[in-house]
Every structure is written in C-alpha cells, then in structure tokens.
Amino acid sequence: MFSRFFSRVGLLATPILALVVAGCSKADMNVRQSTLDPKGPVAQVQYDVFMDTVWLVVVLFALVGGLLVYAVIKFRARPGDENAPRIEEGHGNPLVEIGLITASIGALVIIAIPTLSAIWYDDDVPDAAVPTSKLAAWYPRVEGAKENYAKVVEEQVLEIDVIGKQWWFRFEYPQFGLTNDNKRSVPNEFVIPKGKAVRINLRSEDVIHSFWIPKIAGKVDLMPGRKNHMWIQGDEVGHYYGQCAEFCGDSHAYMLFRVEVVEPAEFAKWVQKQKTDSQPVAAGSKAETGKALFGTKTCVMCHNINGNPMAAGAFAPDLTHVASRKSLAGAWLDNRDPKAQLALEQKDKNTESSVAVDNAVLKANLIKWIGSSGVATGADGKPTKDVKPGNRMHFYKMFNVAGLNETQQKFTDHELDCLAEYLLTLK
Ligand SMILES: [Cu+2]
Image (cartoon, rainbow, N blue to C red; front, side, top):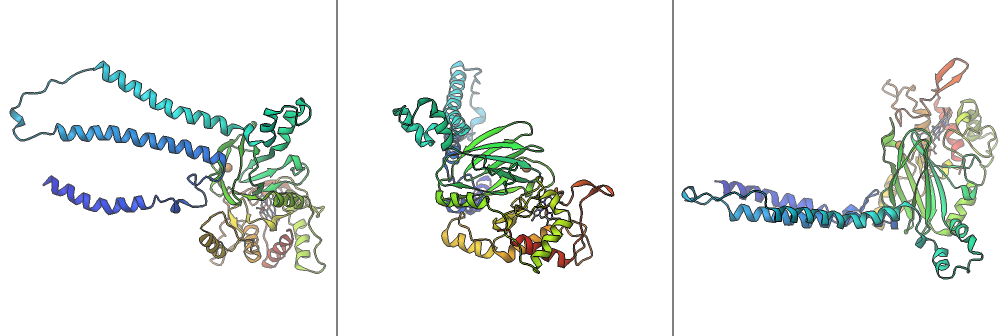
C-alpha cells in the first residue's frame, strides 16, 4: 500500500524535478540583474564565496541526509521484531558530541576564510588593481619621490560620488569637476571606463538607500549623515542595470539606475560631453514655446539646464543632457525601443547589449512623466495614475503665493508636446 503511494509520488516528482533542474542552466540565468553572472572582480569574488558555501552545504547535506537514510533503512522494523529484545538506548556519547562540535567549528572556519578575505577585498580598491602600485612595490623610486606614491595611486583610481535621494540616484565625478555644486551632476545613469578600478563614495540626502549592480558589485548602504564606500570595476563593455536595495519609501521599487561600461577613449569623450551646454532652440519652433513653458511652469525652480540661465535648480535631476540618457525618472522608464532591444539581446545572447535611445519612445515617456501628476484626468474620467507614487516632483510641497502647496500643475496636450520638444533638444 505504502510502496505504491511512494512509487506514484516518484512518478510525478521526476518530471517536475527535471523541469526545476532544467531551469538552473547557466544560459537561462543570463538575465539583466543576476548575481550568478559576474562581470567584474568584485562581483566575481562575491560569487565565489557564494559557490564555496553552496558546495560545502551540499557535502554536509549529503553526509547528514545519507546517514539518516542509512539509519532508516538499516534499523527499520521488520516482521517478528515485536518479540525481539529492546536495544538499550545510549545517552551522551562524549566522543560523538565533541567530534560533531569540532566538525561544525571546522566547517565554519572553512567558510570564514574566503568570506573574510572577500570582505577585505571588496572594502576598497586593492593595491593590485592600481598599475603603479605594483611597479612601485618593486621599484619604490620609479614614480618620482617616494612621498608622492600615495598621490600617484590616488590619481589612478577614478572616484565617483553616489548620492541617494527619494527616488533617484545622482552621480558626481569630482576629479573632472562634474559635481552638483558646479551644476554638472549626472542623474540615473553613470559611465565608467572598462577595466579601471573605481572608488564609489556613498552618501544619502534623505533616508537610507542601498547601491546594487548585481553583475558588478553590491550591496552597500547610503546612510544619511555618514559616508560609506566601496569599489567596482567593469571588465566587459555593456549596459548594466542597478537598483536601490533598501526600502526607502513610496517609490522604492521604482528607484533604479544604470551603468554603462565603455572603452577608455569613449569615457573621455563622454566626460567632455558632460561639460558642454545645451544648444539654443530654433526661433518659432515648438521647442521655443517649450523652453518658455519650462520657465513659467515652475520647472526651473528644481531643475538645472546649462545653457538655460533660468533653469538653475539644484534639487532635481540635471536635465542638460536628459535626451542622451537611455532611461528616465530613476531609470524606471526606458527610452529605448523595447522590441529592438529584445531582438538585439537575443541576437547577441547578451543582456549587456543596448540599442540607442529612440526619440519617439523618449518623447512619449517625457509626456507621460510630466503629465502624470495625478490631477489630470484620463479617458475614463478618473485621475491618471502617477508613474512613480509619491515622487518628489508631483507631490512636493513648497511655498508659493497661496501658501504651502503641492506643486501640481495642469497641462494641455499642446503644452506637454512643446515641453517634450524642448527637452528632446537636450542631447
Ligand atoms: Cu532607495
């Protein structure tokens, strides 16, 4: 009776198990955010620690499970056992107990060694990642005076400040003067040169956030009133997806970011581009109307646009190059053609491949974002749903002539069209 039940369960379980195991193939794990597909040394070390632990646990499981199965079979009740003499039950075998305690400690030590060394390695840019430091270790006088050694190492490490806000990330490159104080910060998407060690300084301007790029490194918290740091390095050119990994309020789930790993020459070009101003708009164009609306509809209070002297806000994402970015609003809205993007990823078998910005998609996203304040009504007569619940653009309280108000604006379709046309010129 029982054996028939078990054989049925076995019959059912086998194909299910086969399906589950098939899902574990490496190719299927190649998704946009996967810690099992490391593309840089920090993520690699974290992956290795994970796998070390998995294998140790597999051995322990087989050992303990195996002993249990052995005991169940060997000492199972047999017909006629009722009359057999009872076996004395033992209590407290010191040899077994001490043996098990020692084995457990041994297992913990085995896991602790790679774990601790990984924690040290991930903490800050290791000397080995700085070309000069290797050389200087052998020839301390090669790079000029010895006292300059620290400075040389420092110069070779690219430094990026990451600032968390509800609900988007701001990136600053102090070595290149790309900072919020200079009105040259970079929101949502940042760029790093391939194969170069990057020190990441993490701060928050409001609540706790967490910085996580699964394929490159993660996670380290951004804490209000406290500096944290980590380092990253991208070894393969591509477009990588990151995410805030610490619950931080209404739109936490919509607080994403991207990092583009590019060839060093591309990186230098990108930095130069960030230092340029926006171009003048053509007279009589929709963009010109949009630029004027950008001034009158309070946008200038929060947003900075270099080349538009009115727009000098330091609170919200810098829009000087908004139309060149592949995503919008904390990287929640994608400005690329989704079909073309999927086709490319499938063709290359690589989720790091990326198509360029699609202007039609970008325009639709701009209109959706700016117009979705929750006060406008949709075709069904109900208030439109906001793209990011609680976001600090549509639900930010500030003083105006009428007192403390949320900055909700109403727009006509024409106004939205003109605003989008203006923002599209900000390449
Ligand atoms: Cu967050």
